[in-house]
Length: 274
Ligand code: ZN
Image (tube, rainbow, N blue to C red; front, side, top):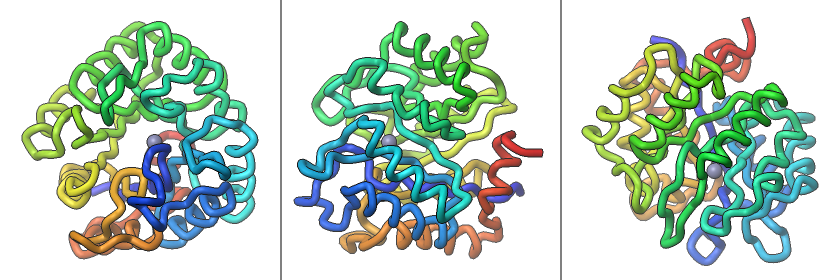
């Protein structure tokens, strides 16, 4: 089976230190955590930034730049920069898409609206068209985030319209309140709707972390881990670093007999390199 690409989602925009005491906040902490995740076997890092003063999520291009420059200087990681902004605050489109200026290879693309954490996370058709157009112009591949079947169907429609190029790359984000649950049946239903030539990765939030990582492993997909999605390395045991979460999964991959891809190998799998 193809090698497995591990994506490390370093910090997200929502979890604060009161519940996640070890979560990286400053650009330096985020970059350092990404470097450690790479050393542990991650080949992609999914990056959000935080306002260092308040700890809240931010789309400030200058904060992204500080992280990106450091990560590029020290590693050969594939960068996936978020365009989510802060779910629920629904920032202006230009602000959400500002990280494209840093020319990451991937950027997140939330393929529809959903209720998330008590608020509406709006990705309406006008936003989806604009984001797809700007990503295409910037040469950035959308990492299509799928929280439920409607988002996957939406992405297929955008593909048929030529707005998103094939082969597509999906990230299945399962177990969010109130998206598709992080269960085998739920995932298989999504899987059946995916184009055969697509690449895909998966994570389950919280306690869905290990079961969904194993779905990615056995079904031939790729795996995302990290403190954005889950802060426990084992039930009741907080991860002190993102690297610990990466190692939790690389250990399972090796035990199963599927090797972990280097960034160079991941670039070939995703079509960025021959
Ligand atoms: Zn994210």
